[in-house]
Image (cartoon, rainbow, N blue to C red):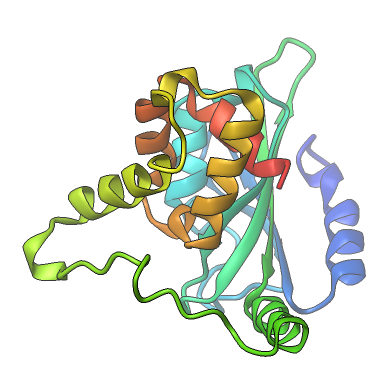
Length: 209
């Protein structure tokens, strides 16, 4: 049994505990392929399937040298279901990356439940037509729309982005997360650029939500 295969019983345990709304996948970092998967969301994904773009990006940016895990980031399944995800880097004693273990959990029903609770507590969902900004998609590129969304959230604060305090950054992250910003590809990198910090730091803030 290889070092990575020794994690398979643990993966089965995690998947069994979390249930069918969870997907637990083990990847070989060098082959960039699936070693084992439990509760696959996509039936076409099996042993030997290529590693997804998100995990591949983690490896390329060598985030494993800074963190042991990246938790509570947002993603989409192949069926466009919203996911809360976590990735753990499996390293040898020398710090070399051997594998990647990712847990994906469907949160669409939880989001619907949260919205229902908000309606029950508040009586109705607040309407913010005067404060909400609407954009014509054909007038803005994806990159422009992403940047505009972040800049609009920053208007709440009276200091330049790079001078935000820890609490202000947490508030900013919360606002952007509620808008679904972190489900958009490139959002982490763009926010890190604007805040003049690392992507790892942004993931660390998200994990604290």
